[in-house]
Image 1 (cartoon, rainbow, N blue to C red):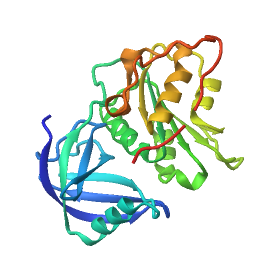
Image 2: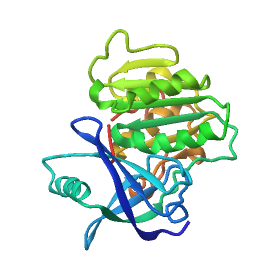
Image 3: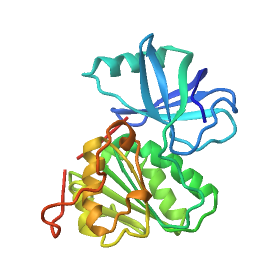
Length: 264
């Protein structure tokens, strides 16, 4: 799809945590059509476009959902918050991005997000669930502390209602003893280290990654010795912060590479 510029109406702005808020926009259905996993750019001023993952698969009703991380100490973040709260209409440019769901694949899905990278994975998962695919889906979500799982209830709902879905919560601070449950697993530490410690073979998987370049490439390096197929891994990071080669050969092939997190 060719990106197009349009104006959308602000339907609602809702705080999900003190640091993350959800925005619902509405435009003409055909104008906001997009593939699950794509992102839009929101016009902050005459020269500044800010990218945000679209947090829903195309619904046909003209709605768009965004999850926005608010950083009070960053001037652009504060301006964006004020613009969204005070405006009835916003100018956006969409869709962009190649990290989209492969609807022709019959491979299990490994999906990894840090922070508000959850938004992109939510859109991909909605599309996968709507297609009634019964392929195994392993979703990993990494945060600093439990409150940062800003839609934890939704991830738990997926685990309860989709037998093929497993939720792996990764936190840098300990989670409650009762956090885990059926198809819900708790991990302490960094996401790349948790992947390396838990997974042994991902050679048959489609892998989707959403986070900062440091986090994404740390995960790539952790999964490479476990059979990661460069042709079957997708992330927006590969377009705006490319690394060549994507899968690098370590001097010590027996070791696990590591490093860290998020993109709004």
